[in-house]
Image (cartoon, rainbow, N blue to C red; front, top):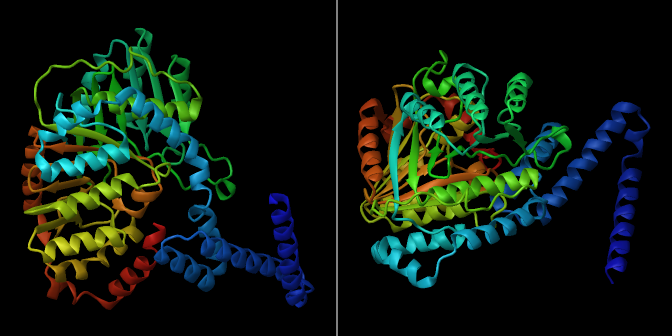
Length: 506
């Protein structure tokens, strides 16, 4: 039966192709340019049908069809680079099930113990963490201490200090790694620790770190360090994985200390880039039980790229101090997860807010679900604040973000633009007791395409620190006024509206 269906499909395809070739016979006879014109047109028509039958979100479908219809050549190239999601489920299905099995095996808890932990949170926030546990397969921990690291100097000071103390292993996973001053310093520490017998594994994204020199990688490998690129792409226009990147920033040292947050390895994160200037960012250091989850995320990513598994006690037995520090839960999101786990947790956080929702995001391009949740929260009397950069590092994203501001301001959201430098923190704080900090931006790419990891905190000391830092950041921010914002130059409004059309693709 299957063979018959395939035969019918081939016959129909050939019939349609023959008809189209007959229709375009004049162009085909006009030489190479006519041939290319027909080829592009046929490709656009084919892609249009593929997108239509993928059953994407209507906004995405219409956006792609408009782009392909209005700018066939540019749209065709753009689709090859960013649009081919039709194989996403097939590409990452195996990883999803392997990761889920590993999490349930290593992190699995009996229902009684899980209910005891959730009972410590009360019904209001307990539902959120139960949702996170169901979608992300990782439990909440009350035996993990956390420390907020503000900006590059404090973050890299703690990272280098802990790297030098490593005794058994160091695991690193980054989106961007640069061969600059801080990159060189990290490399030298790793080479030194490798000479002392410490096992080091380094996973870097092939696209995010495309400028990383071969000498840098070779120096690591020659020192006995395993350095592996995630999702290598030899032919970007023909590679289906080009659009799915590993945006995670993870360090795990001896299975006991972990780092996660917004900073990659590069001098700009220390404010050394003259064009960007001061870089405002936030990272998190963890010690204790939840580091095992961070370790597990790294090990499964490593297994996905190398087919080597290390799910053993020497890597998955963090030291516990048996002290109550508040709730900590690490959640991995990515194109391998059918539930868009981080996006749905964000939605639940915003929808469950009773008093306040404070958001900091460098790239604010929400989908309709998140956008509606934010507006409804503000209209309900919740204190909703959004902190974004005043200057762009990605212009299309920057202008697309600003197109959302009028509706937010009309709904009562307080929008602030950070003036001191570039604001790169990725923070959500709800009711001053629940917070998210990690690698995920509040945009389509983080929600649906990138591999991300976030820490969700409940009534920890770090939650209180994030509240204090957010309040302090507002001192360097300018609050937008709806009436004044509506008077901006028509050129900017056109630019923003045009960028907004591309937002489902960004």
